Amino acid sequence: MSTQLSDTVALLRDLIAFPTISEVSNLDMIAYLARRLESHGARVDIFHDEIGHKANLFATIGPDDVDGGIVLSGHSDVVPVAEQDWASDPFELIEHDGHLYGRGSCDMKGFIAAACAMAPVFAEKVRDRPVHFAFTYDEEVGCFGAQALVDSLKKRGIRPGVAIIGEPTSMRIIEGHKGCYEYTTHFCGLAGHGSHPARGVNAVEYAVRYVNRLLELKESLRFRAPPDSRFEPPWTTINTGSIKGGVAHNVIASNATIEWEMRPVTLADAGFVKEDMRRYCEEVLLPRMRGVHPEADITTEVIGEVDGLEPAEINEAKDIMMELTGRNGAELVPFGTEAGIFQQYGMSAVVCGPGSIEQAHKPNEYVALDQLQQCLDMLGRLGDKLAA
Image (cartoon, rainbow, N blue to C red; front, side, top):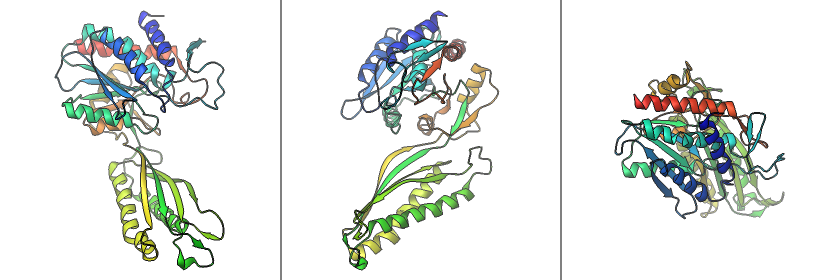
């Protein structure tokens, strides 16, 4: 085992020991990473959330105040382990048959460990173009940390040029994925006896009308698919996941709730759906509801709006990663990442990291040692490139 791989395993062991499930603080892990990077000369900034419970880390090795740097990005949070049948303590790294087991081993503390293990190499070699480390919170519950980080960079005038998001792709280069927009829409009507429907506002019935409109949009979106779309399916999708409302068969329902999502191929599609539903509520549903009960209302709660990563004809990140990995192309994936947020800030972005998405979120999650070595080799070649 190489020295860098040994360092990566040791780092990963420490990172897995931090139980950074999205609902809890990640501050201890961020402080650990800050100390590690600072020991190799990195300039570290920590950006806390509004209540000081979580934080993003942004560190730089190389020249200061230089635009166009390369970001190595990973999220610090992991999904819960409750009700999963693990063969070992999920927050204790176990090495067996070339695999490293533990929650977050592949998604995605393995990449964070590899990136930090290479910090001394970058410190020695990087001269003209900086390497940035971006470690975020709350990716698993809506990518809130990445958006907050980009906002922080914008305020400081920091503009990197390339973002490599190290989600588990088996070191394949990913140049595109759909967005994920999740909503909960609440309907507030007026209760009454079921024998007098005109005296109430049935929230369930208006929720059904809302869903019917979503279904109409769902069909129309098939015809908006870009002719060269490589996604599967190639169009923006809508899914109604849950409808709840009412209390009994003979009571006019005063409340109803719909949980729904769309997976947009383009930002234009996302805007199209949101604007259509807004107008449908304001021009059709609400006037009817308020004609009976002026206090009736429809409100939509944004659970998360994560931009997709749109394949770009000119993509420096893709070109660099093809050079570093020796691969001759890039792919699309169905799962979402923080990459689109970096892309919207003006960076070229790709997703490429060790481990398989097939192991993510499952009991006995693992990353293979040979995957970590491939990642280290890629990062080593990045150091050589930046030293040239």
